[in-house]
Length: 309
Image 1 (cartoon, rainbow, N blue to C red):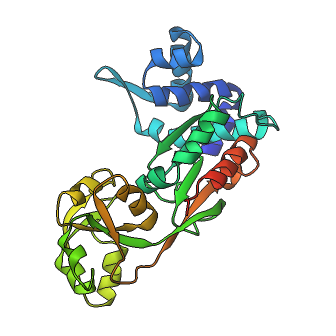
Image 2: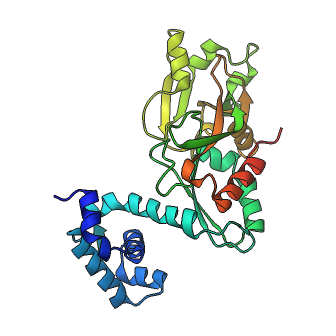
Image 3: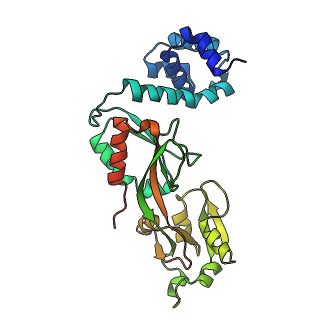
């Protein structure tokens, strides 16, 4: 089997960026008809390009299944490198030195979490809508918290050292508090929510990746204690309602607790044990550092992506 270098040398005369653009759109749309519409080309022209790609790469790339097309393993493996290559061409060769947000029509993909979307993004998104109405912000939950390549332009992460060729900028610090329903019996106790009362309650845990345990459990383990997690959910969406309708206690970031308590029947109380805080960082790959549009978005997020006192 030819390696990538051999393949490039063998087919150099046949390769052009138009074929890669067609492949990128086909892999996203999974339809020759929809790809042709997006590319402003006829369906037969896109089919011919797909045929050239199949011949060039020695793989069917997309095969029919049900009512659409599905990528072969080879095509799936090419998706991220092809997108990254095209982005590099635009950023380093074709992009203008200037970026006018009022006239721009650009798509930015930002990897976030429920926390970031609720606490940090409302103001930035409102400003983007005013200043750059032609731009599109696509929010996604990256499976890898360090994924700042491929389709992802920016990443919100609590990690402060994402890796090589990655730039970071701290945005906001946060700590942990507890929330219970506003008429929870623990609120009437003279001692408040001390450690024993805290451990006696059923707990709610938000576990985005489905794994048990959290920083709270780590701190309790250091004290030789454990808690009973009665309910585990994958997102923050359902948690406020579950806590408001039960005796559950939920330990969560303070800024998120403040936002949710104002909307649901929840009361905020201090944690009865010290839990380390964290800093949310904005991270991006080095290759975007000098891109004018990317720099504009980073600057806007840094200016607006904070929490009011």
